[in-house]
Length: 114
Length: 112
Image (cartoon, rainbow over the protein chains, first blue to last red):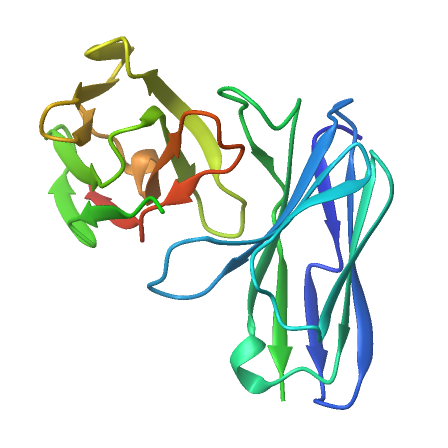
């Protein structure tokens, strides 16, 4: 498989549940990202990892917890979410974090919080 | 920080017409401006990008222009086809920063 793969594609959870989103990239990239996409809003950067180290955290609530065990895998652990957290969560990767690095996005995980 | 404004939010054209999407940015230090296309059910995909040392770049039916003085850049699609229908995002990245700031997106609908 090539590119950036995200699972699951769709997730419905209650506010008390704990779930995880998974992202895997097969491009040999060193940087991985989580973005939140809500209707009529710009893509919101949540987290950036470079060589498994978190380099950016854009004031994301602690109910979102990222994990990057290696440069090919990225997780987003979810717990006690709110209905306003319903959105499309996009994972992306890039060769590095400097210069004009092209982002390659996955297809996203559509999250609905009831 | 950087702020990117994108217009229009929706654009409907007839097949064969041209489409233009415009973006403005606030940080004069920005030097990289990509455009992404997002089709239904897919993630955004880079279609063209431009760096601040270039005023225009073309790739077949798409072109991007950059006016650094006015801090705006535009995407031009000629001879539009139904498969061009998608949401298009512009973005900007200040020099030395690792991350992009995106616009809100433009939904382009090309009618046969």
